[in-house]
Amino acid sequence: MPFSDSPNHFLASLSARDSELVRPHLKARQLPQGEVIYSAEDTIEHVYFPDTGVVSLVVGLTSGQFVEAGMLGRNSVVGAAAPLDGSTALNRAIVQVKSAGATADTAVMKRLVKESETLRLALVRNDQMASAQTQQVAACNALHELEERLSRWLLQTRDLVRSDTLPLTQEFLSQMLGVQRSSVTLVARKLQEVGLINYRRGRIHVLDVEGLHESCCECYAAINGHFHRLIGWTPDENAHGRRAAP
Amino acid sequence: MGGQRCLHARYYFHIKDGAELVKDQEGTELPTPDAARRQALKSARELWANAIRSGKNLGADAVIIADEYGGTLTFVPMNEVLPKRPR
Image 1 (cartoon, each protein chain N blue to C red):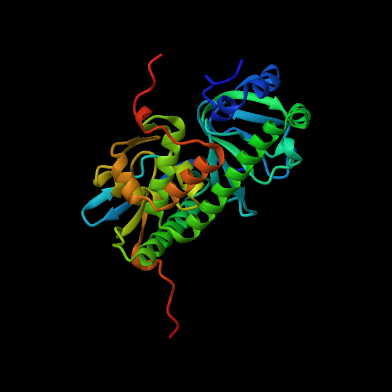
Image 2 (image 1 turned 135 degrees about the horizontal axis):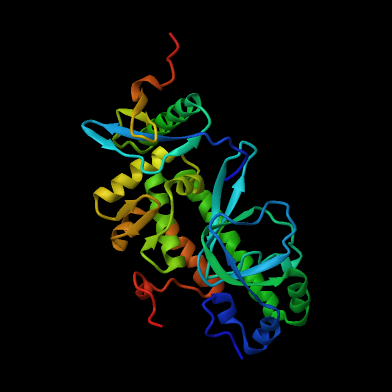
């Protein structure tokens, strides 16, 4: 039986045969906000397929500072490279919005990709997608203003959590964007004044999606273009703001 | 996230902009008032940097450091954080 009903896009996109290969090895997993799935240079023991929540890939410096290089959620796989002989982590994966999903052992997945070329290619495309995203984010972090970057970031997070309410502190936001919290305070005030968001302690409500599209840079569309081309995923505009009926 | 910190008190970094006070709703836990002041300095410099880079209004006169009871401890005027010019 295929996973076509899975909330995780990677699993949902697998063929019936690949689904049958993978399904017996999946274990349900819940990850609280702030949980570090792996750190740079760790051996990635498990591949994670999120159904909900957001996982940030962050790059740490010796100063203790971190900057986010990309985010993954229900669209993809955390640790896609691990079964492809890339099991040494290149960055840190940290749960940004609490997440539920499934894991499979890297060792098992390594065996499965030898049995199925289509499964291997699916992981390759997801790894490429993660790489394409981090390259876009590198350019965005270097050249775009905080207001654009914050808008891009809110839109991306909203797409993954499928809700207009984002449980995010400014502390976390500032760490992800690599800026001081006061910078986020001022930009958030501006977005709030023009009616795009509402910020309450630890929670951001997106009020005007179109407005956020206008205030963000080209990187949001570019990243979604990578998602679409490489893994066939497009954020579903209609589902936003309301959860699908049970 | 990152490193071990000695968590002693929560400091709030409000931003004064003309008659308006943009409130820090979360605060940051820092070990000493001195660390809070250094934090405020860094913040003020970054606000200048953002404004200069974007060519937009600064939107701040001072960074105000408050304690968790709402009392103002000290403030860092934006004009005092610019690098000195060589004479």
